[in-house]
Image 1 (tube, rainbow over the protein chains, first blue to last red):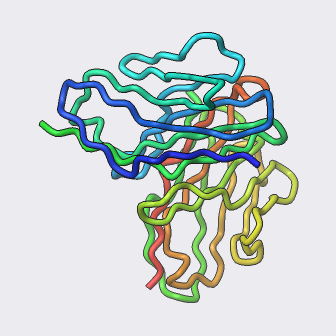
Image 2 (cartoon, rainbow over the protein chains, first blue to last red):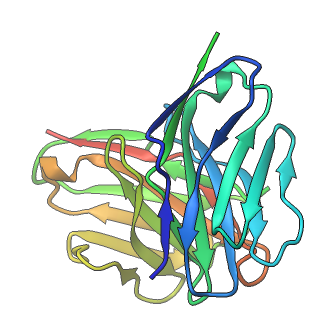
Length: 114
Length: 118
């Protein structure tokens, strides 16, 4: 069965510092996709970054990078130079073959301190 | 591109009434729409998958007679919460895949609907 685990319910980071949000996954499918989404208090889901299971290089999108360690089945999100506007809920998600369903982790709430 | 417009953004209704939530794809054809439910401080839980022109597929434990899903066109999917009760109060959000192949789909989300049943 597919599973996404986010073990950090909440994280604090000082403004302008980098922060890593952890995500581990479990799947027996050889082909899958890993996503990170940001959900501010307004509720909308904002796509941040995507990593395919066959991608050789770690994905990067501006201040976001995904530390993909396939053997460890981890897909941690790194946010560099945190900003106050980064305070939000962050969800790790995985799509897998057999219907392109997406499963979500429990989420990590990030608090950026001024 | 790939915008899904979801309405209403919030609704308060009386117990026993029905509420319809709409998700429209504005600049692409959404042959599939996923409907999620999110309780406060929890993750998104998939309720059902709707496909244009066919019956929706519901996840285990989701009452299909209570949560009616219609996907009559390539740009519109609706979720109707019938005979709503306070325990149906939740945040409902839709999502549609677009582009890509295999697992490399992009997903775009509606802005969500906060339902409060009083």
